Image 1 (tube, helix red, strand yellow):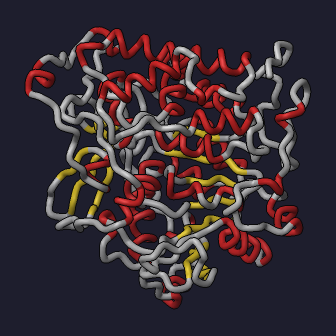
Image 2 (image 1 turned 180 degrees about the vertical axis):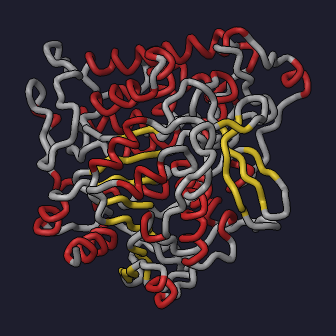
Length: 479
């Protein structure tokens, strides 16, 4: 299994319309597109050929867009860096920096298919592994210790050169945690992929560089962009129509009780520790925030008032106006199809839009011929009571907002059709769709799917790759 002559940097930088395989020195890494995950819907060769002619820019969150990735061949994915829940919450609390959970989730999802037990399959297993959450802290630390010392069975099947690259950044992450031992880092429910990505981001002081390393090691050739390039904590907040303010994605989308922590632990934390870098204040009120996607989908407590505005805040609670990733703006000018993915509207999609320059880049692009919104199959805490028109107006309102310092004065207000040209919705959706009203707004509606086999027991329809592929084919054929 040791491939001493191979290099993890032998891969092309951008995805090709025809998938390549990593077989220069290690033929066991050769992959077959037909060996993908067993539950992945089949996409026809003719449809794939047609889609590969178009370039896609997909704006999405983490879990919300993972199930439809196979619908896009030549895609760039833009994801927010403001999630403050799950394993990311503990990394942010102790180390600071942007949230990397959604990006890690997409990176793992885009790892190419590989035969069971192959080196690439072993790498996927390691980087998608989570430490247990239903054990003591000491037991979780013991499993983590076995991993960074190279003794865990998770390393089985991974060639030594790749093992040492991955382990090196996990050790770097461990070292950074030890520097902040007074903050009592919790390894419960910790994601190994998050730890690797956070270690690489801290080492390079660059999240894009960490993404490049992750995608190179896993041969994913994924084109994933953080919507904001920063080494600092990125926090979103919303204002409700009644004036109430909610801070942080968890509080907005799925508030959960933090893990129990003693008062002595809280008092021992230094909010201005010199190890945190650049004097940023790291949130100290929330210890390891654990929730599952299943729990999130199981029900919610509606907000007592609708959200009217989303904005970014710094560590002191002051509103700030970060610049979007320049590569995001560039891709808006070079892509042909823009997709607002299914997922949480206010905490996954809109954080990628509430930035200066994004509206003009979308409205002014000469190549963007399709701008499609994948309407959710049901509402959630953020959108309780919304109709399809409400989704459209929320997106348009955010994009037409003014964002200082370059957003004051005579800023043009764009029509709805400048941002959204198509609405894709599911048969049986719980969100009301008024097709006539959409047509008046200049939006064409596309109905897809029957009851998917992947629809949960709740009966709420969900997208899969085949459904999205069907919608894309219908849209593109009408252009």
